[in-house]
Image (cartoon, rainbow, N blue to C red; front, side, top):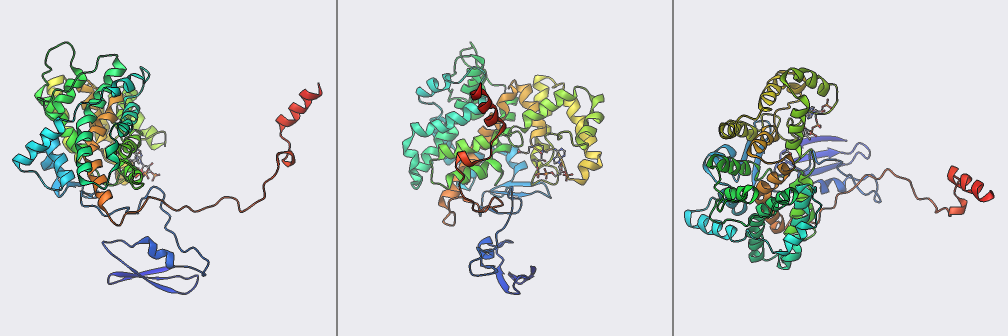
Length: 447
Ligand code: ACO
């Protein structure tokens, strides 16, 4: 097959048949359904695109988040992440992602009020939570309990109603920190803490996590702001693994609680939201600065990966990692330096000078330093992916709404390239070749 591009189309010549096809180019892409017209015969199904892991397939048109991986750019609705991290709050950024514009003062106040008044959960959630084993992973609990919320809010099935969608958005952003904190308190055997709606979003979450016998929990303002910024940095990242999973599940028309539970499940994996936990485990395994060269060599020899490094899209420094590194130093001023920071800094320095990492464009990603901060704040490692999920909720919701309103979307249903057996006839059990077990059984029966 030969392909040439002229004007706004491609001319594809199929060398199998000599036929030529004109394929329109729009937004730098072709509609792969056009390839189906390329056939060797009338009965031929037509040409398919083969793209495991969707390395070069756009699944939607989106107006939410822009990434230029080569330049290290990340923007939500056009606003650079650096400006949002410096000047915005998590709830304001959530508004921006979901509604498309920054709110005025009054709209922000109403939005904040509405979310704060959806922080409580139905009391049956407590019973549900109590059913998990004492050592259940909090992310597993989150996947289960977010999915369970769909059974509490049956009105959420009405995904075509804008009013219903608005209500589910408030419920999900409001309740996720409550569920997250409950999952932690359950694993510790501590009583659950009621939301304190006079605190900020991050402050209330810290209170629900760490409040003990004091009458009122007072969050440390530096940690409260750091957590808020970390949530902003995680709020969206276009069509990543969890968002694509969520969109695929949502394409069946299911309610948003079930779709978001699918997003949480995808985020649970060590190559996605579990990577910051893997970074801490890696730093603990390295143990001291003098062991770094040996560790780097083992990675280069193919024995595991340098966790917190590399990204499918960023082939330059992840802009979120830069901001997080600065926050780390601010947090350590309050909490004391995390002893593993020095190992991380030296690991980064050595890796960024090493041809193996440089030639593959492997730079620190968002997870390289975030785990160190979470650990210094007192979060156990199991909670790291849960913290990621809290931050990602507005992005998932914005993507869900965009998906539901997108008339070009259909139920997600990829094709496959079948390489299995051709048709064959069923063989009755008595006619199948004898196995060693059959012979042994026959021997036993003869005894
Ligand atoms: N350490 C060592 N080598 C690596 C790493 C790494 N962290 N990441 C990629 N490579 C190497 C691969 O071995 C491969 O080398 P090769 O060409 O010699 O075979 C090359 O770089 C390309 O790697 P791919 O796996 O093809 O890259 P892909 O885009 O599929 O993977 C991923 C991206 C999954 C993030 C990968 O870089 C990785 O596993 N990183 C570590 C886990 C991590 O930090 N995940 C968090 C991602 S950010 C997020 O989800 C929020």
